[in-house]
Image (tube, rainbow, N blue to C red):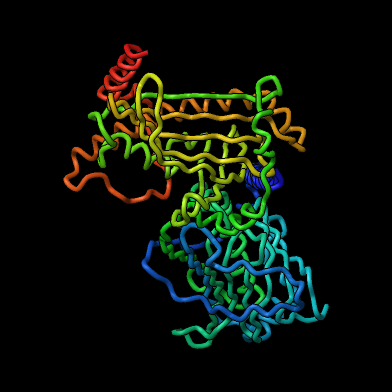
Length: 495
């Protein structure tokens, strides 16, 4: 509950920030024109970039805010350079940089950004370990710490809560080719702090636009303060290093230990009391899958394919639920994080795997069946309490294969009144939708896996996808639909 609430509040704050940025852009176009200046923009994708200086992170106190290094970010790595060459400066490098130290907010357009020193060891001078909050229009605010300081150079690293992860360096140097000229350069090495930020920066370009305007204005004002003139234009160069996205579970790695220490939100020893009369919902669902020849399950048949799908928790519709778990942890020890989506909301719930079974069961009418499956129980913070079982059956006499879901549940205590009302209105409907789509998806996935095995000489691949692929409804595939109708007819004949 607490984790999902924090995530919701974070999304709301980010959305509000982006909305503010959009409104600011629409209502203050004249500001952009005011700060427009000749610039040259280039962006290229490269295999690697020069390494960041990686100055030691010196904290002014043990209680100082933790840093947010590049390795903690998501998405591609961006190495950006904002560069201006200055001819005939009236001031030397140290004098220009001293002016920046004393009056840094002169170098950023007030309507688009401001530096606020939030921790100063000496109010009159900058020192390594000082902390700033850079306030940029829209959602691009962020805390930074000064980690390197020289008369003509300084470096900030990002801290927790910043919308980027990395570092940025400001430097003045003699021009490498023109005598008597200077070169001022801002260089950054950064990745987005999360997927939301990456979307607004890389896809929509809102934050990138504001960021570019701020730092090019900074370059122009350095030239103005120097008393010299800009040679040619201000150059903005971006080198993007595509970074392979980590597996989904890696993004939530820190949370697994916390969920492992979280207790169940109900007492499973009271199972005899979990009845409809006591307010519990009891659900049973089943669907037929492609049949096999009579006898034990085939290694490459429907039962084995369904077992693999259930073990990987691929059958739920990812638009509703995604199961996130550490793949090399034994199923019996698995803690799974359920990422649930509803409208604009995303919730994270923890569940514990229980009841892993692989056995032969005897039924009265259909004989022996080979059964494999497992269930999970809800942990504190879940909107529901209870247990759900997922099982794959093969009846050895007939060769029929089925996927079954059995669950008992009831609404848990939900502290947030908005979520409580929402779950009361939509919770049961979502439960049924989960079961219905899981059944359809399982049938379609098994049919697709069997078709793939027939067309692949080496059989079904063992590659584990990092994201469950989208699967169309059975009705969208004529062959699959015909097979599904055939299975349904077989079930009706035998019922």
